[in-house]
Length: 457
Image: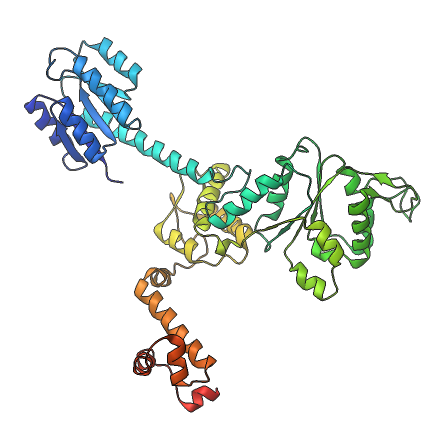
């Protein structure tokens, strides 16, 4: 960020001295009166202004300076104004701070002190800008634990915020590590059931012979070892939310019983003949393709329609434009604080590596890598090596090089047209909307084999 300073001072000698203080560090503009100061403010948008209150036509007083201070704060409320006063003029300094000036400086001029005060104002302006940027990133979603800036993920969050106040049964799909349980908890936290229990069970982690009793509970003596009655997860969630994780792995034998519960909203404990009414909101999740499971006979179609009144499809991290770096920075900030390693930041090679890596393990993998890097980093900069990622900057540059992107797309289109037409050059040129000579030139340019052997391959 270019630092721009506006010096408002009507004394030519002081103008020169103050400009000299900052000549190498900042873009400095000087104004001698209210009109020229406002013109410079609009033209250059400085982050910091030093303002001498004694301006013409009232150089011996402060009325024109206070009027200009009011104008500056009204036109550019984020600008940091440092009021310059006389040694004994504390009253006006206090009044200026009360109006919104960020600091004051008392004459006579001391270059070191003035530089310190101005640099402090620039730092304050920089911090406020960073905070606003962070706030704008997180304002996209109010969901606890979800950091998102991509259109893809923000769309999911918007849908979730609409669905949460209702009691519709919701299915959350997405690859492992994309944060499906966080979204399930958000559905609970944003609902009218937030003050009730959230019960979660992983259908893939519990053996089939135990899953039924875990879900539905059992009566005393129902089986060997059942020395007392026990509520299942469904009953434990009464009034709240039941989260069935990895429902795609639920055995077929239990799917019928779960369907009956969803239809009747009552459970039959193992060994009991008396159903128990339950008021619970059901949220399910799976990383598997449920339609494929239905086609292969592993999942009941009628159950699918019951659990998917609303479906939230969580995109993989690699498909969330801009999110990897936003999430990585948020993780680094939180983990560095937890591990007592404050003020860590990513180096340029780390940023390139984060953006170019495919993240097959999604956010869960990123958490592991950033946590390791937070521990292993030397100094204040986390590198690609700390993250155990390669800095494929050349590949990243190629992805941003328009000529390279265009040529790759052109070559792929020509190959596709040739394969579609059986390497018939006349048909391929018509399909591509170009002349045959142009197609021959392009195949030579990209060294595409159009021989009979290539067509048969």
